[in-house]
Structure formats: C-alpha cells, structure tokens
Amino acid sequence: MKINLFLIVLVFILILAQARAQRFEAGLTAGAAAADIPGLTYNFSKLGFTVGGLVSTAISTKTLVQLEINYIQKGASHAPTDSLNNGSFRYSFNYLEIPLIFRRHLHFMIFKKPSTNFDLEGGASVARLFSYNYVDATHYPQGIPSGTLNNTDVSLIAGLDYNFTSNLIFCIRYTNSVIPVFVKSKLPSNQFLFYSLNKGQNAVFQFTLKFVFSPNKKEQSPQPQ
Image (tube, rainbow, N blue to C red; front, side, top):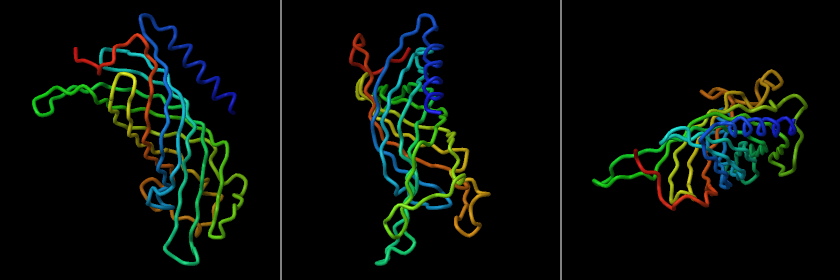
C-alpha cells in the first residue's frame, strides 16, 4: 500500500507538470497536531506531530493548487483525575496522508490598510494507517483485535494561512474524516460511545509552518490584481 501511495503522488506531479505556463514550487512542512475521536473523547488532548512536503502551482492570480504528502499522528487520549487511572487510555494512529488543497489569497482592509497576508484553504485528503499503539490504564501497550480498524482515512480539510513572507507560512488547519476509525460491527456495543455528529471519525487541529523554496521570487506577500 505504501508503494501505491507514492505512485499516486508521482502521477499527480506528472499531471501537474504537463500544465503550460505554470510555475511549480516545492516546500517542507512541520508542526503539531491535536487529535480527537468524537464520541470516544471530546477533548483534543491527543498531541502529536506532522511533517511532510508539498508542491504547488498557481492556477490563477489569486488561487493555488497544492499537493502534499505528510506523516501525521492522530488518535484520542483520556486521562481522568483518578489516582488509580481508572478509565484512562490513549490511542495513537500513524498515517501516511496525501492532501489536495486549494488556496485562495485574501485581500481586505485592516484599519484602512490593505492586507494581503492571509489565504483560505480547503480540500480533501486520503491516508493509510501504517502503525498504531493502544495503552490502557495499566500504562502497557494492548493489542487491538484484527479487523477492528479501518486502514483508510478520507478527510475533508479547511484552514487559514498567514504569509510571513512568500517563503514562510503559518497554517491553522482542521480535518475531519468521513470514515470511522473503527469498524463498528467489530466492536462490543458497550465499549465505545459513538453518539456524536462525527460518530467516531478522526478529527484533528493542525498548527504547521511551511517553508516554500522559491529562489527567484521576491520576499513579499501576494499582491491584488
């Protein structure tokens, strides 16, 4: 499956590379992820990190399309204030994720001064689970029965970027999967509480820095038409 994911990335890049009069830029991303599985927990206390790379190209004066490949940690954590750690647990899921993002430059006035530093972004991603860890109140790793986890994650994405320069970007992003983390038919009915809107999907807030390599670009924010 890992080979298939890299083939998908290669195909996307080759397709984009055929576009005429387009300029491609590559970059690196790294940051933190606060994850939750609503219905199992409601606290976004499972902390992890994400790291990866991106390639982007402008499809209009104000719009970019961006392809990424990321390693990201998702899951859920619960640590009740109990001296015996009763009910505590932590699920850690490690994914290889491929988001396809559209970014739109925003131009508006702040205190009568034009601002061109913000971008809105939206898109979707497909990810593959390649490892996981489950720890219960004993603090020892526990097994998860075979066939209990959905190995594929498909998520919708929304975010906001702030461009410090044309090369350095801070991104706040929220992703919510449309496929549940667990195969519900494989779980005991009293083990998990999937009574939320998301019904057990991955939900993640990401806070990342992007460094874009654009040696011939002037260090300035995007300008309006």
